[in-house]
Length: 372
Image: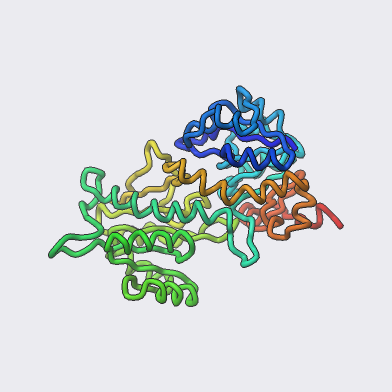
């Protein structure tokens, strides 16, 4: 199979879908690999490194899209890339379709085979290709939130770790999954006062066992969210419903109870965000103010630490990608049921039920399309 990667054109995105090490593995399995010139620059990989690994360098994204049977990316195709997608082509990347109807319709119209990293499962029901970026985003949420709280950034001027004779800052994390847990590790390490809200008592029990009296656990209800955020200096939105739009758990009216200059970081922005006031931002202008509260809503947070993120991402995406290339998508999903939920669109059919529900569109199970 001809496998390729292109320069990511999303604003502020510096990751790349394949490292030179990834290229070696695809070639070792009998595939040809094509890389757009300069695609790896943002992550510190030169064209020479890709050439040494056995890749062929093509001058433009158009050349890679035209040549390759399978495109390995990091972020979803943008509107200028829609015309480059073609029928039967495998697009293997983060898609987050429940927050992007235009892309969903474009993938269906172009009859692509769209495989979303974020909905591929593992044997325990987890999301192994989303996990590394969730961990990085969770850690970055605290690092970023701490910076936004500085007075010259418009924040309250609070140091989350406090000082001798001065109380620590208050951090509220909504959602105790991978993002939330990573955020708590960073927050506890800073010495902040940390409250975690989740709807799973089992998850709260686990987190209480892990962190002990270094955190406060609360069952997530609207009343508890409102009470917690009213005292917060920093609120992290870390809610995920796999493949679906994020629920709006913090309403504008609740935001008004927070202290001016406090900060919210919505890590769920890729799926539409869990604050009613969320709107997508980019690294060059990452924040805005609503109701006196600083909002940080960058949809590709890990792109800020592109080299670390690229290695972490490709560690997770390489083996499933090679399996798809080796067997073809159809045989791969038949052989590995964990890949099946990753196929969001196939040959003009919407095969992800959560996306169909989000947009009121027709849903066709992949098994019905493939038959047999």
